[in-house]
Image (cartoon, rainbow, N blue to C red; front, top):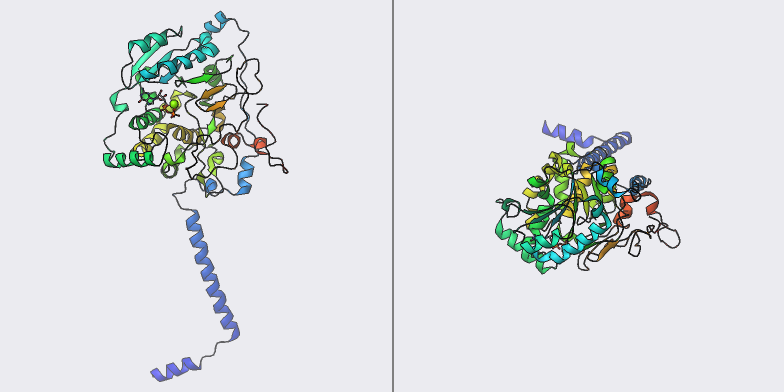
Length: 427
Ligand SMILES: Nc1nc2c(ncn2[C@@H]2O[C@H](COP(=O)(O)OP(=O)(O)OP(=O)(O)O)[C@@H](O)[C@H]2O)c(=O)[nH]1
Ligand SMILES: [Mg+2]
């Protein structure tokens, strides 16, 4: 019997039509497998923002076609001082984390900000420190303002190693980042400073009665008269965060932050603002990676309610638990930036181009305010990658961070020279 079946099989001669049909069926099957595989990859839940991760040139251009138009504040210059002071004011404070040893630096910052702005508005100064302020510090700072001054000791639980941190891994990170030359990579207090600025400043009860803060560091300069109240301007225009430089920093200090943030987006998609615009922080030519652009957070005017929100704190706790403030050297600048991009509409963010400012080697000076400023106007791209050390291998975006944020005509270049059409001297 076997013989007969076998010999029948040997006698089988398929027709050409049959062979073709089998070939097509095979090809269709392979194509289906490839398609299913590709779709599976595309729909991976770990990529929480598929439309951004896969940004192609066309989508990217479309996102950046419309230039963002920052609001223009109206001037209080001619309003008499007594009228100005009688106005109801936002509940706001100037806040500064500072060491006793930085008294001269904070005196400089206070002199600048009082002269350019606060002598008219008298917003209180609140100084924070991880050790008690000494009498000399208190006397000298009080001497520079008519406003109230408060001196706050940071609670130990806001400035210490959390119990879930593996100390030996932390020490290895200090040694490693120090050895490869990441700025202050070896410094324990710097890690606490970044973590405090990320997740604790707004938790101190002294700020419970306030809605707004303006962060002021020692040794900064304010070059221009500020003829309006930025707090009132933010309140009236429903703004939540104001910045004044948007730059790159050494990305070797926060290599995991973006991956962790993507995981967060996957776990909490409902917390992402429906109008969140990630296009300007996504490197569309680098597989949807974060381009490391960040608001330079030593200058910030912000809504405390935003930082106190459940959304922000869910994000902060998520990141904090993974230990990147200690195992890497996460900065508050990229963390604030990612939070602002994810949880706010861009319309709630303001570029204070009119506030001439300098922090160390970074400076920005507006162009059209000659009668109000004592600085040389700077182009928009001035501070783009000044802080990125030569040895950092990070890719830099084709356009400067502030241009990416502004979008539209700010990205247009002359076809022949490759120069930007708008230098920013008119802005
Ligand atoms: N009280 C207190 N303040 C600190 C401590 N570390 C940092 N700060 C404050 O935070 C500010 C920013 O810290 P810096 O170390 O200067 O950080 P940076 O300005 O990003 O870095 P540099 O460019 O190296 O100056 C300092 O000027 C201090 O005012 C600290 O241990 N205690
Ligand atoms: Mg500094």
